[in-house]
Image (cartoon, rainbow, N blue to C red; front, side):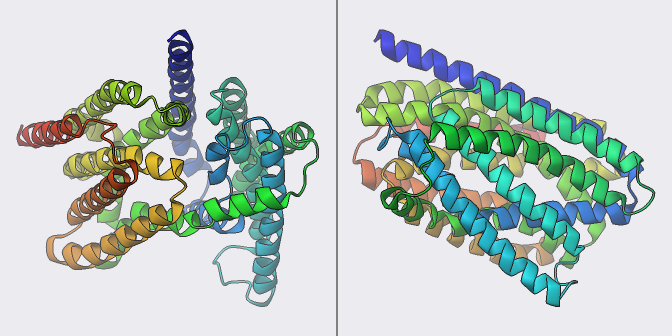
Length: 437
């Protein structure tokens, strides 16, 4: 009991620091946006946005999403997890070099294929390979609830990248987008070099081990389409609003979605602390402890969901002029959708524990396809607001699918079904009441 209490305290402390860190980084991003929109031309800013989109997309493909297996590997190689991470770093680095080698060869023949200068693709390669090392050690430290180094390096990277970007941009008269991108990339590279050295040293230079590589590929590779589909689920609605409505409506929708998406930041922070504790409890079959812990966890997130919905009109008025105020109607369905995302993550964690990653990937793909179809039909019929409800529908589908799968895998009611569904109904009803007023 003493050991369990100590672990719970450690998880809460780690979760608290992750939340603080994420909010500082997010706050820094929000505060500096007006700075960069004034330092860069609209064309330069567009190139930076395009570069960022490609980077997030190519990072998933190039690294084979191998960081995903590090969290669960603690259950199988607790004593030599460092060697496992070192081996995974080697494999993901090789795949990244191969992917960008092919991409750069294609760009040399078709320099305009991506719509950004080829020099940025070279910078992107360095950013992806070094950020991958940081992601690996972040995931490992989260698994063991070691938050200090992760928080420090995350803050250092964000602050240093911002300062360097401003410095580089001010020193350039043209192509200022290069300064913005190079500043962030340089900070990532500095952190990545240090982290890579740490991983290799602690991993005792374990470059290759067949057992590790096979394990990593079997768990992570099926998650590549899962995370790619997740990107579609998060971003494709804005593309279709621009196609079927007008780019002005895309801006309104995006502001509303951004307010609701603050919950995503909370969820990722909470989940970073919840998952290591949950896996340990599952391994020790402490199902009653899980059932007790999930109730305050679920209630706390519910309060944040309703809080965002309640202050949505005031929040929108603070962030944008009157032309954006209709975005308040986007927030409630988006917030409910993210509440469903939080709920289905509870059941996805069970699938991860049992290494059923193919099921996770297949459901996300189906949900992404469903989202595209619904957007295609309903945005044309009802306008941009329909995108918020199609997103909600897609997340409801994901929750239902993962609930059924996890329930069959466990064969036990470890989350208290009655409590979960009572919370869903209560939050939905309260959201509707808040919308009426």
